[in-house]
Image 1 (cartoon, rainbow, N blue to C red):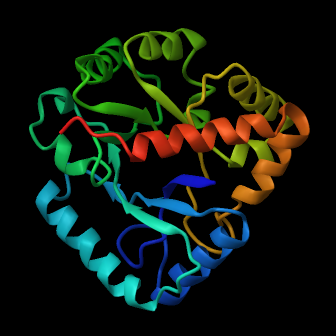
Image 2 (image 1 turned 135 degrees about the horizontal axis):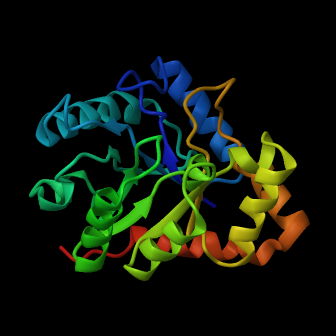
Image 3 (image 1 turned 180 degrees about the horizontal axis):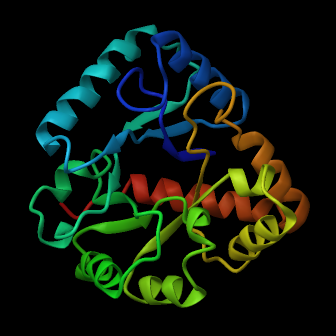
Length: 235
């Protein structure tokens, strides 16, 4: 399986606090059946330039890489990019895509989105040069109607679901997440892991829930979708 959204790089954001924790998170991912993993530390345009961000991210990766064992998941470097007004006109977006791809993992504000926000995201996705994957759409179940997802999907955006609603949320949220998975609305699954206790890698547990309720073929589809995204580039 492929974990498409994680925060295991050491000491770069609110994720892993140490090299030791990073290695533990990778071991937990491996034990949960993950063989490829995307490192997506937070990027905020108001705090750092894309160039400085990439330098910091790559530095964290270079500290971690020599300590990894050969059986740990293959790592892809990316970012979780927080929306800002004017993002659709930013020339730096390719720098923030997952390395070697045109895939941008985009985090939206935790409030009701304005039409301007939705139209700006749709503009990026519709252009086709950048593939927009909307991060953890389960976080917006309470603020965004289904029309939002239909509008963005019609313009080319893809959606990432966190494992959390499958494991720790109430039955209403779990049923909604399973329905989106069953209907093919979700393109990729991710743990959005930050540590080894409260927000740990748990892909194996989530996969077991999916297999129980809607079948293993959905897990296969999510894995193939993720692999296809990591192997595709328009640049």
